[in-house]
Length: 585
Image 1 (cartoon, rainbow, N blue to C red):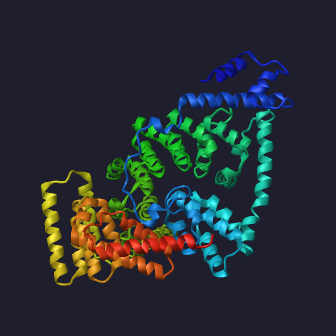
Image 2 (image 1 turned 90 degrees about the vertical axis):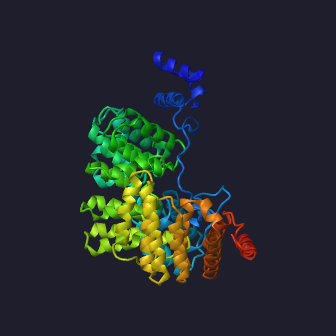
Image 3 (image 1 turned 180 degrees about the vertical axis):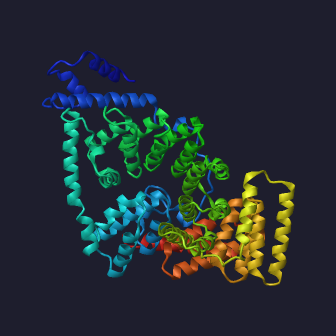
């Protein structure tokens, strides 16, 4: 702690004399401030000093984030805020692109897309068609993680929908006024009942979703309750409040949440991790890393691994894959929930295989995880799950997942894959489960070679669906083997379906980028497919996606691609960049 901090602590120990101007000057409060304000500032200053001593949230003290597959597509490059040398959401004006981002983007991207809609609506230059499209997607959006931003965007809409959102401001202001008064009475000792605990559940949830609009005094009270320093709340009340604040996303709550992680109270750590991961602040990840590394409880570590993934750190993914194969239903459910943020395209087969379960809660989180991955192979599995006539809540999750997958495929320039042969994906899933659980063996390599050979034989006689099924099986046996994935892509190209080939090409690059770049027929076909797809997107007016496709392929080593194709890729990218700079702001 600094010398100033030590002097302040000593001042608390011996008390401050009335009218002591030096103390007020040190704290930066006016001479007219009363003793209570001086006391608040004094405690806050000491707390800041103590927090700096704990070195909470200093990224340099923590190991770098575990590497995750790099998404070089337009969606993967899209930044949530300006300031980086890549496309960013606050600069987008294409409504269909922003709609797709709101449905299928990362948490930060979806938040930024909703706020971008608000800016565009407030600007007042949108035609009725675009306003109607925005209104439709905002009305149907039900993700609580983005509820704050979506509500603010809805309030900028004209007409009845906007009026309904704006009408919430008056009851909110009334609730906040009463809450501030109740909090003041509580801390002045006029009542012994904690005010938040007295609120109905829906009002507590409302406070959590609108936490970023709360004044500092209310946030300070929430932090005190979470930490248990209010003197009135029991563990159950603290946990209930913590769950209500899961989607708050307010950095002012970060110190309290970090203290809960460090308390190692098993009833509070998982919910604290979930809330902390949703705060867009660089101090969140180091605290989650520290909690993950010292935890030894499977359930707790599963939640922490998902929170880390949401914060951009994939180090817990192998552990989650192991937990999904366990027998403890609670741990499996927690791991599946975390896979929503941690899973990659390599996990699609495993998650699809688990859709055979009958637990509605587990099915819901599996469906959401598949939607977040955005791999088109999951669409058929979700369709099969829909045919089982699930409960309405699960059906809604399926529809949201399908919309998210299709939105991500749209942003990457892909199209849904053709239906595979019946049971082929399930067979691949079973092989994938085995492959994820053990090192690649000689027999796995041999079986993979046979599967690839059978696929090529079926392809030779024109049975493309059966061929792709065998290629998928070969890929599942050896997850980092790019050859069958490239074979799937080339099969789609042979069928005149270049947009469907893009997803398989990306999976092959993720498996072994160098192999794809050095395999002349593969990289040549890939370059041609991207060029044709970019031209299609440009003709459709989707210039951002066209630029993203070209950026993605130009990042590869294209020395084995014909000169005329390389020239045209660069020329078209430069032309699109020029058109972007010439667009009116």
